[in-house]
Image (cartoon, rainbow over all chains, first blue to last red; front, side, top):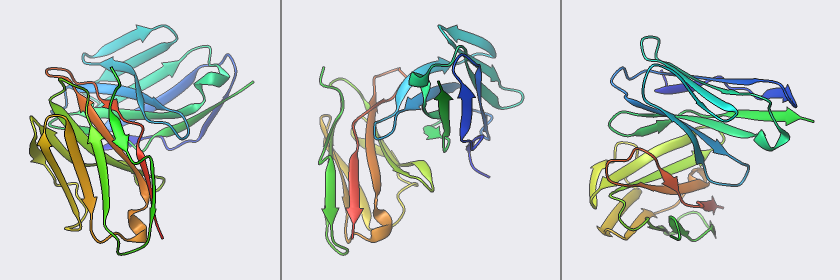
Length: 108
Length: 113
């Protein structure tokens, strides 16, 4: 079992729609959770962090965390073509582990 | 701040050759991570350092791989001898004391023929 798993995608949504990205993790001791965005040919960049159960909103992005279910999600509202990228879920226990990523395409 | 600096950006070499990848973390950052990214396996953690000391190298795939951090501003990842299956993008990332957020370098794309 992989330590951090994401829905494999690819995910395609029309412009203006909500994109939903999901992630599960195996280490119950994990305390910090992150979403990184990676454009093709570029390095990952942080877009959201979440440490407590519940929702955290930042502009069009909402991260959701449920530690009991070992589940993290990212919602992107009013998706834009510029959101087209691979989204990486990262979980910090003793180190920082990443999921394989979900490629999102937002179609105009 | 120049960010995390990696070199070379691209490396093409032949099987059996030694490859050395370099990383300069952000000044003041005390954690340094080396990751490898491929389409098949995603972003894999190879090794990480805290205050120049290797903490966990369990992700290093084989004895052909080695990493060092002789001081707070420099780290190397060496592959000797290289093999075609080592072809990947290698990322270095660093984080500040007490912070969980990683800042990545631009990556080094390695192609082993």
